[in-house]
Image (cartoon, rainbow, N blue to C red):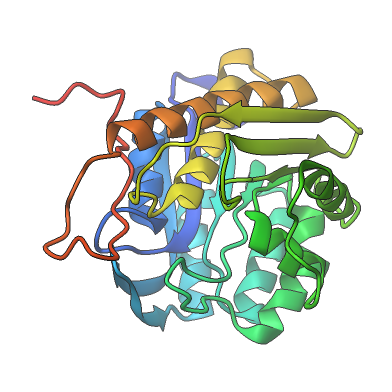
Length: 293
């Protein structure tokens, strides 16, 4: 046990992801979510992304060796309770993170398999998809794909799930690829309540249902949810002084995170943050539980 573990410290979470200068997604959303959920947030930036509420215009990748140096700066200095990764744009970067996870340096590891931006801009190189399928999934504790991402993770020609049974089937197929758990998000369904299904390697299945919020302000919801789950796991691990994340602890973390996201979506439902609201997708309200002055 390190000195930092023997003394008083907050839960610590790490985000490995790209930037968002408009503040709704990526590292920016993750840090705000970490703060809102009560953890000390740390980061390793994988790409500088020029994006806003209308989409991505340019991605500038960070050299792998500098990403590695950023990870060393955090992991060699601080005990990280939980980590999430978002944008890992290249095969080599995926393999770098896989190596860190395999060495048990990341704590509980959540993978948000960022592949294509809402605007349609491809964020993952074609040859990196296979690395995610074959190498990243087996070292993850939880993956949080939306419906299109889940289909792509299963194969290039796999259709997107349309029914609750198809969602459950695809989540189980993804668990068979190696992650300890899969949270398949149903927000891309066209109508009705939002249903998300959590399947664990032990066979536990839980469906979480929330009323659909009528809003175009959905920019960064995937980043925010995966960061919230990661933060909740860090908080619960620290509070209960455990290293292993049980199915019950994960269930509680996911439930807390989904409820936080639902509040954040509802609070920002009527925001207009863009000069040109037509076609814009604004952020959620990461500060929903924080009193504004």
